Length: 266
Image 1: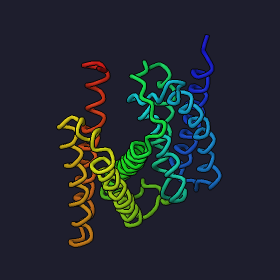
Image 2 (image 1 turned 60 degrees about the vertical axis):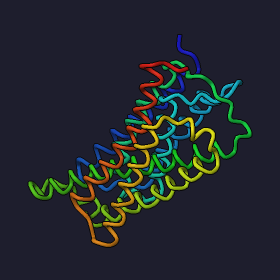
Image 3 (image 1 turned 180 degrees about the vertical axis):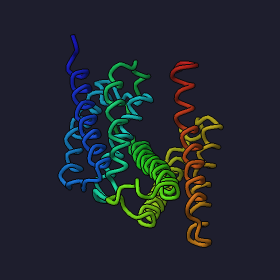
């Protein structure tokens, strides 16, 4: 028999998958997406919030294992995509919603990592929050870069097959750099808090994680300078975005995979 957490996880995933299928059908038929359909993502997002609370907030502390963090990032991305409006968000939601559903369905089945009590550790919580928000924005930027790459490729090969309802390429490119700018600011704040606010925890961070994080942050910084000073766009922007996000993903996800599933928590 499934327990309440597992039932909630499966229900959340079902709602996400159904809405993603609806968005895909409308986009494929080149039908304008009603605003209420995008806002319906708030329903499974509310269920996912309840699920995350049950998984992370335990009586003895917070369970921040890799799958829970990934599930939280997907939840943040769904909420962030409610901001720009349905025209920009719909193609991204079509990609993000199934990922959020899959992570929600899988989360209860993964073993808990060592519990860490965070009550009262405000600087640590601030670092985690800003880092997660920055990482989420950069992940959305990476997905948006893939959408831009696909759209540019389609416009070159078969422009008639591209949905007329999709936002113009220039608008989507401007949206990409707004995402990167906001994510860069949040990552800068997170790094500053780590260095000056929680120096003990920062000193214990694996060296390769620190180096990869700084390199990823620097790549996005160079990309922003290139954009505003030299007008970088198109394939250059896509490549730099994907490269920068790959470094950030390796710095965190790669480290957590090694610690939690290969070496084992200490």
